[in-house]
Image (cartoon, rainbow, N blue to C red; front, top):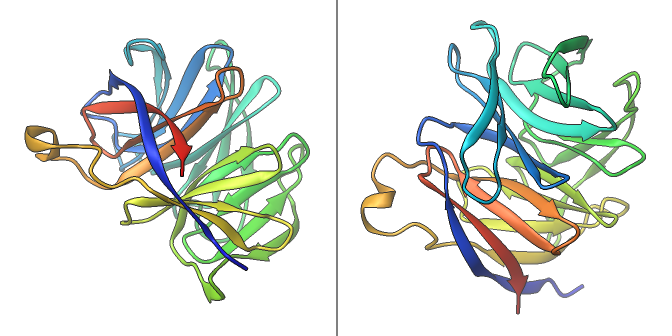
Length: 231
């Protein structure tokens, strides 16, 4: 099967806090929610999508390295990297709620309206029950017939899963039923000049279904971009 090659069409730029080692990004109701990582620095944040300004934040306990983020109804679920815990927070107040346990590493997370989809840095997507966080299935991802490892941040959009790939400047669109990559999206060159200083890898995908646009950024990036993926 042919993999479609796409590129990023930048519609606008907005600021992004330099201290945000971003792990997860979620759009809801004209708001952006962001999870950040690193021990002693992990946070959950609410951002103004017009400016990128942080409007609300809560610290994660120092022993946890925050990871991927998903919104299920009124709850935000945040993974942790190696401590096998997923925390829940009230979407509006950020009040902590139930904690789930799981096996293995936590990287990316998204919700397709029926099930959670989770990555662990391998080529595997694990499907989980949104109420219990128990695994209910899995799928291995292939790009042109080869395993695609280092799957990181995820975004569920209209039955597909978009994914960052750790340390790569491209994104992929995955058919979760077959594991096949259908679209390869070149996102290289978004940062230029001084913006590159201190910046790390591309990471973070959120989708605005009303505008049909994506928000993408990276770890310690000073900018976020509202984009479309085009041929």
